[in-house]
Each structure stands twice: as C-alpha cells, then as structure tokens.
Length: 208
Ligand code: GRF
Image (cartoon, rainbow, N blue to C red; front, side, top):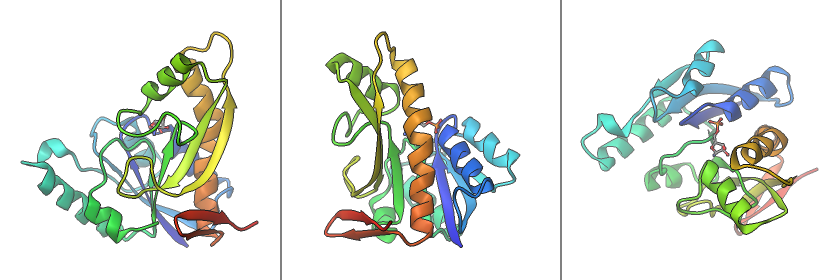
C-alpha cells in the first residue's frame, strides 16, 4: 500500500481529485496518510478534515527564519512516513534536504506543458496569463518528479488542452484543471503505486 502525503496551499481541487480517485478505486494500492499546508486558511485543509485525513499546517510565518521552517517542515513530513509526496498546488520552495531524502519520491502538478511557461514566477493564474499573451493554441498540465530546480525534474505525464477563442485566464485555468490536472495527477499516483514508473538517467518510462 503506497503511503501518499499531499502538500497544499490553496483550494485543494487537486487534493480532492486524488481523494475521489482513491475512493472510486481509480487509484489502487494507495492510502492518503496526511495533508500538510503552509497556509492555515487553505480550503484544502477543510477538504482533508471532511474526509477524515490527518491534516496540519506548517507555516513559514510561525518560525524565525526559513532555515528553521525548512527543518520543521521536513520533521513533519517524516512523521507521516510517506512513500510518495504529492505537491498539489504547494507554493513553498521544497527544502534541498527534503529533495535529497525523498529523491524521485516527490511529484508536482504544474499547469502547463513543461518546458513552456514554467520556472520561477510561473504559478497559478500567471501561467495562463502568459500562455494567452503568447497566443499559443495548445496548453496543458505536467506531472513531474521534483528536483533542485523549479519545474525541472523528470516528466512523468502530460496532457494537452485546447485554447479557445475568448478564453480568459480564469476560464483557461479551469479547463486545464478539469481536462488535465485532475486526470494526470491521480493517474501518476496510481502508476507509481503499482510499480509502473521508472526513472533512468533523468528520463521517465511508464510500463503499459
Ligand atoms: C493549480 O492550478 C495547480 O496547477 C497549481 O496550483 C493550483 C492548485 O489548485 N500547482 P488547487 O489548490 O489544487 O485547487
């Protein structure tokens, strides 16, 4: 049984997609063992409580500096003893010590087709604003392993979504969530839970 810890910062729709996929058995061999948020007002925490999933907040605001926060965050992560950590809209930089300790066991959902519209400063609506400003016709989402860079780790799954005439950033964001994020993040967890994902020389292979 894969022990999955989900890390969140906001509304938690990706967390909800994971919860629903476990409950409907779209994801097998998996238990969501906990939810950690850096934001104590994140609705994602309410979603976790509603489903009886242990949840807590570790906020940088509660510590004198980032170094202490990083230590406390890793301590809290370790308490859940996760096999896999899923960043579902988690907007805090992952401490290098945590990346090292959980190498190729931390995954992230990014709302673009990496390497487009990613890296420092590209998160949430900003991604979709940039895509519309560039005039691309296809966008999408990416699930990737987390390494020391920003959105630079080995890519696991991607899913394309069409841009439509008149799209606003908000409308496009919602379509990317519905048609891509909420599908490929649960799918990636199920593949990992069933031993179908392998990383060799920084490239991911997915067994059929
Ligand atoms: C999503 O747009 C996701 O792509 C990005 O942050 C947002 C999180 O949304 N990483 P939610 O908290 O899962 O609703």
